[in-house]
Image 1 (cartoon, rainbow, N blue to C red):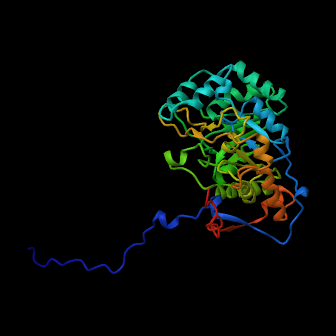
Image 2 (image 1 turned 135 degrees about the vertical axis):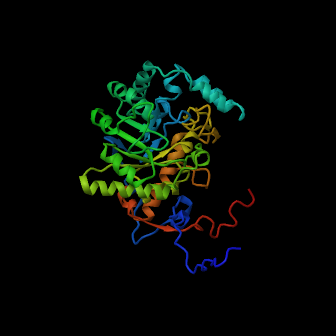
Image 3 (image 1 turned 90 degrees about the vertical axis):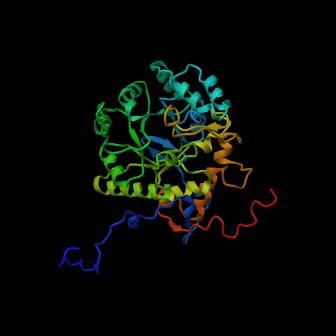
Length: 394
């Protein structure tokens, strides 16, 4: 033992610890919130659902997701006749196969343990320039404006090509859209340059960040799509652990839209993309700040959908890390029934537009902008309060 050694004095205080968990902010999905009635109601027939979206007139705020099981030229025409707009996936089977019906049938019928391999094989076929041009022509012939979608890596090639062949709207859509993409092996797409030289509007998705959305708007985005992982056929949240519940995500991006409008005078529509299955969720998305709603699986249930009652995510073709899964949604009736009824079920999954109209009327909202001003309240018990008898005896 060393003589005269003194033990350190016991500490009476410790430094402050800054834990990330202490800074977790609350976020909200559709099941967490409810719409609060105000002091007015209006007649449902007086509700106006129309708008001009990226220069395209819509009678209803419904977009069909760029998913192969949802959109083909015939489906685009059917939705246009009902007032909405479908987006075609330029990197899907419609651009790879002269007649995609055989591969669509094969994907729909595949056993669960074989479907990922079949998807990878299906999307290995090359995209054909002639088919891209033909699909745009077929969409126009079906009576619809031609909205098309591609990932950032393919946008530089297909954007000018599609504009030259008559496309009306180009959507640059990726799993997570950012204002700056860093890469060492290739030159990333410059969105500012791309939007500047494209002769048609360029929409961008997807994001959940107000800051990223604002910068995308500064770079020329004609609309911003919101949602990372909320879709029924998407597994991004499980596989990558990324995502923000839709009500918070839409509200944050809508705040960026409003700030950008104040600064520049340019209004950039916000599209809630995914996570909505019932009419009430459509209303909540618009109340959170959305201008339009992109639906996938709810529309895959239509008899006009090319997926024959199944749906799968756009990221599914990856052979090493599939981030989408094939789901069986069934076929419940025509597209018109799903959107306008009459509903034959009480779960809110049919007559989606009718439910949206009725919700707006009950809230005194004559327009979509009025609905954006409706009050949202935190109400996680709203779906179960007093509902214990529902579902019994079925």
